[in-house]
Image 1 (tube, rainbow, N blue to C red):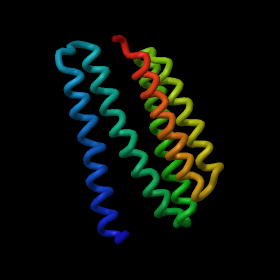
Image 2 (image 1 turned 135 degrees about the vertical axis):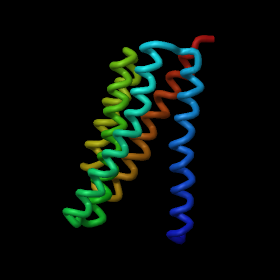
Image 3 (image 1 turned 30 degrees about the vertical axis):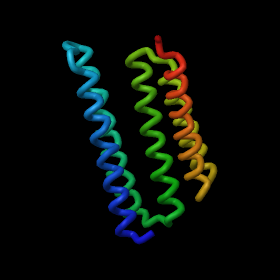
Length: 147
């Protein structure tokens, strides 16, 4: 695939991944007031801040260390998965949601596993363990949804 096409696809998917959770969060918080609304807004904002900080740290390390593609790949995948894991841990603690907390633990284990898997195995761990963990939690919530 040409780099320009890949860049456009990545940009469009990134924009969707940024806008969709914001829209859903705004809709979900309608009618909420007080501390619940503040906590929800702070938690939602923390996701963006965490990923922005991760991007700055990883970009600076990559530039300063002039690392190989393999090391760069390991750094980005593991740190991104670790950010997700920590955010799910925080959400689980914040709302006393044990399944969300467990997903956070799973994401952190997956982040460690992705580095141990090396390149290109890290991408498999990211996709199947990381994405699979999210699918398992989604299935859990779909099955447990009150009727």
